[in-house]
Length: 208
Image 1: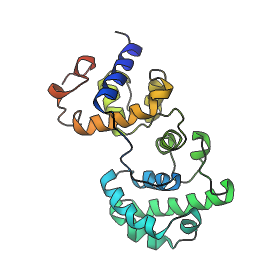
Image 2: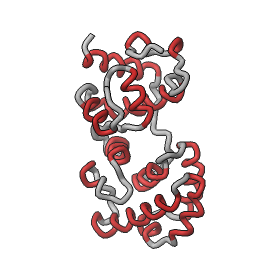
Image 3: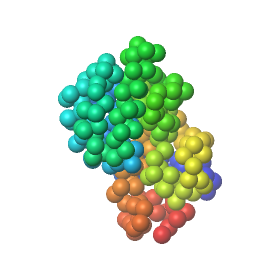
Image 4: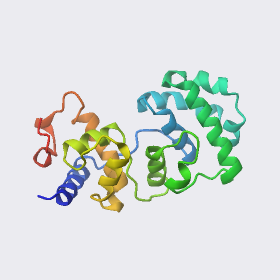
């Protein structure tokens, strides 16, 4: 079976087993998703969701964040880790959204990565979940599973993104990545993958 065929079978199996998969970060707008994703770096989505309940009740618009006292944001997001850097990025991000983009979240990866603190992972999530465009969100689950499945052969996020773009149908790509995350958390775990319970076992190059 060639790599392209394996990828299509993986997509199909994940669709069957995770029909309700979605982004685990809770948000009510493009701005909230953008900020929540920035907070998720080296932090669990569960923790971010707890923090953003308070954060988004205090700050609702880009103007609110742009004018915020950074120390106040730091105190709210402290438990997410790297809170000083994240708070600074959030404020600067929102200032640039106002100054350059008239408060509208850009709809391309090329423009999104110009925002402070926004990398390709965040940009792909926004263009996929908010704008419905093809996207490959490369996080630790995506890297681990893609390599185990033989769909990628690198731990470099950009290389993995490029390799997956060649294999995954564009219209399936965003949900494919969400389903990979769900499968990675539930079954294909980093230290103790549950291979005997895996819906992808017959397609997997790892077979731990």
